[in-house]
Image (cartoon, rainbow, N blue to C red; front, side):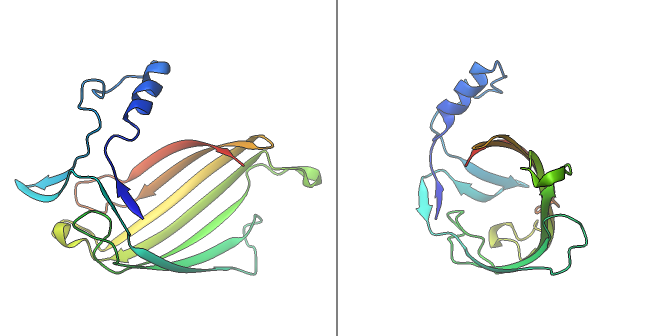
Length: 190
């Protein structure tokens, strides 16, 4: 399911920035509880959504296989592939409108070697792959067919049931003139 709703985290984000003394970047003067996905190029509106939407998204089916030989001296290497079927609604921005296929490799392991088989205080996980797809119809004049993507995360097991992860996601530009880098830090309770 994909849901686009108005202002669910507006208050939380403003309070977070205020509590830590971070700049608001105009969010304290912007309208609250607003939803606006708009993409205009060369004076032509290619996407516009300002109403709450909840509907099924695209369905993805995938397979993975761990390689038997471990060349990297870590947890191993897994090859994965997936096909995404256009079952969502492209106009409501809950689906891509096109079939796509992806293939990628994943690996993980301890960041620092520890003797005696103890717990891993620091570990990493990484992914590298490509996706091949036709761009959504509304944006077909500016989209790319092949997108490379990768991820690198480092996790610190702070306590038995609390870990912190810093993760960097990168991808080649899916649309001409756009950027594809994201960085996030997540506390995980487990």
